[in-house]
Amino acid sequence: MGNVNEFELPFDLAAEMEDQELIKVHAGDVNLPTGRIVLADPFLSVEQAAFAKTVEPDKYPVYLYLSEIDKLHHRIGYAKIKFRPETASRWILALTEDVTDEELEDLGEDEFYGFNVESGLASFMDEETRDSFADKLENLHENDPEYDYYDAVLAEEFSAYSGKNNFSRDLGDWNDHHIEADSDNNIIMFSAGWGDGYYPAYWGLNENGETVELVIDFLLDDFEEDEDTDDEE
Image (cartoon, rainbow, N blue to C red; front, side, top):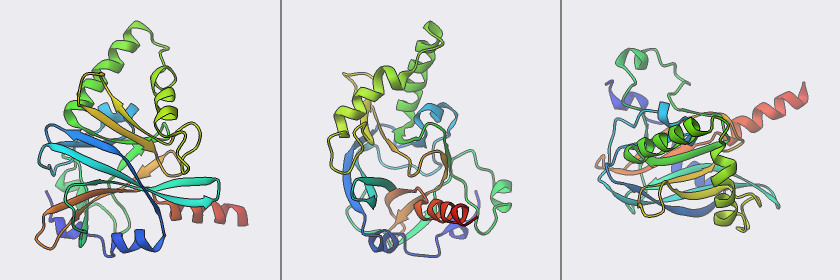
């Protein structure tokens, strides 16, 4: 795969997050039994490849960083898995294992490879968990093609898990979903910024090149700028 330094961010992501005075929430700990991370809209996860970079199998905390739109309205601007306690000093674009060298060579200066959101939700999960979740959804839909997993299972979970939090909507903006009640394998799900879209993720590294964190940027400012432009027109 191409030289990773070509895809290093030209700015300090941690400083950018601090400047926005974001509200930090611990959404839960994600279990990564293989260390192969899948970042995806949970309902599109079967189509999403794991990242090429792996981490040590373990459970890791997931943090959400919320921006106050107004006193009664917050949106998730960033989501992060934290692997080490120190602050990252540089960030590189997180690439899935199916991205080819040829595709990277065609990547423009302001372009990135990321993941699609079509249900308004994003999530962190292990590849093993992704496979179990995909099998479960397939079996449910075979029995009932009209089965809606969100309405039947997730809506109540989201509401119970985060709906009463001061920074969440009543319906719940994040959830710790277990595929099976007796399994440690889980999916940390959360609302994706302003909703559906295409979003990048970055590995945060320390000065020794060790992996400190994995951060999703939901591009809140970009969407706000687009909305302002539409209003002016």
